[in-house]
Image (cartoon, rainbow, N blue to C red; front, side):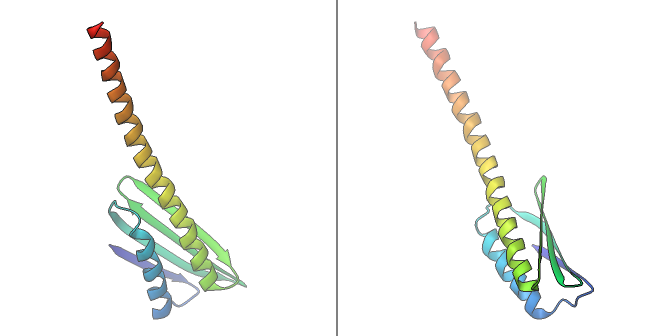
Length: 117
């Protein structure tokens, strides 16, 4: 997967790039579906450092944004927010599939019982 980095009023150093890639790879392993692309924007406004990420998954776009006094803290918070969103999205997908399948099986079982009686 391709991660695109952009810096607004801040230089994207190799240390920042590798930190984000490492943390992002760690949370991607929890998610089984392929992610098509990710865009990271790091910016600095006076004393605040802002980290934003947009991840494109098949049919869904997830966004996370964090602001802190330290860029590394902002990145950590951004990754935590993205991780929560990924977990929630994964639960939605698995619950939806299970709910649909279980309901379908129950309906078939009920129809069979009715026809037998």
